[in-house]
Length: 134
Image (cartoon, one colour):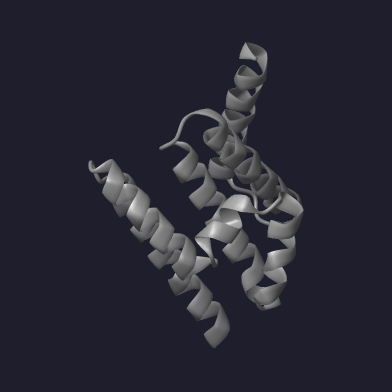
């Protein structure tokens, strides 16, 4: 019960911090805060930006089983939010990683989310548009 309360508080804190970050006007400050959030909630910013999705998925074994899906959701949201701040290949890479994580969560979490479905549809459209323009 205490573990579930901890995870619930952690998720609530994460989404509040993410909302505040996205409402900032200063792009430099947003990037700085985004890096801090990676470190605070999932791990090394550098790792999660350079690792292949298979390595990213493997990294979740560091968390207790009760936390894995929640941490994965946090990372997917970070990828999704950060992709919205970028352009070019960096944006596409983050969109692909966000989609992969959202897709995994959709298939394995046991929780249906309209928001997740909406984000997956947006990512699919954006990634398709990127491929069509190349």
